[in-house]
Image (cartoon, rainbow, N blue to C red; front, side, top):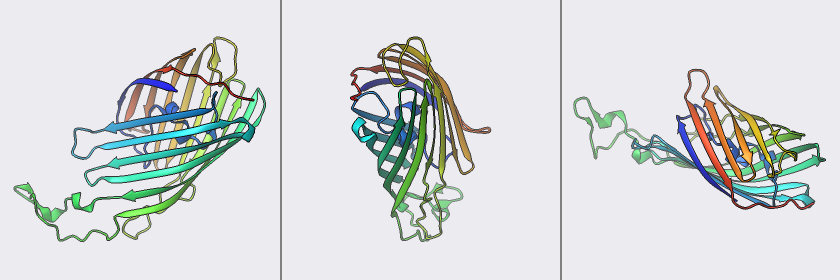
Length: 281
C-alpha cells in the first residue's frame, strides 16, 4: 500500500482519451501486461485528475484498480474502473474492465503478455446545452429559453472495449507497448458512425542501481529514468523524467509534452511505501 503526496502543474493533453502525468501510479491503465507485475500479493491504485475547475463545466477523471500477483497462475489478474466527466453537458464515461497477464522467463528476463476487456457506458445531458436560438445578440444567453433544435434521441450508450499489450524486463531495462480500443467502438449518439481511435502507448525505463537487486525489488536505492509515448489519431504526448528510490522513499521529476505547440505538464512526485509484501515462489 502506498501513501502519495504529489504536486502537479498541468494543462490538458490533446487526445481523445485522458492521460495521467503520474503514469507510474496507474500501471494497468498504462499497459494490461503490467497486471500482477510487482513485489507482493495485491496492489491497489487510485488517481484523480481535475482541471479547469473555475469554469462551469470542468474536466475530471478518476481511475481505480486492483490486481493480484499469482505466481502459481503464471501472471496476474486485475479489475479497473475509469470515470470521466467533461463540459457543461456532463459528457460522462464509465468503464469497467478486467485484465489478465501471463509471464514467461527467469531471473534476468521476463516477458509478459496482457489483455483487457470491459464495457463502457457513455451518456450526456442534452438539456445543459445552449443552442444559437437561445442567444440574443444584445443580451446574450436567455435563461429559461427553449431551443427549437431537436437533439438526438439517444443520450446513453454502452459498448464493448478491448486492449492488449506486452512488456519485457531484461535485467535492469523494462520496455512495453500497448494498444487500447482495438475494436474501435462506435461512440456516436446521433447514428452517424464515430469510431473511437486506437490509443498506442509505448513505455521504457531503466533502473540504474545504487545497490544490488532485481527490477521489482524494493530494497536498496536506485534511479529510474523513464519515458512514455502516447499516440491516438492525430494527437500525441510524450512524458519523460526520473524517479529516485531509497527503500520506502520515492521522489521524482517529470515533464509531459502535448505534441507540437501543445500543452505540457511538470510533475513533482513524493511517494512513501508504508507496507510491503513478499513474492511467493
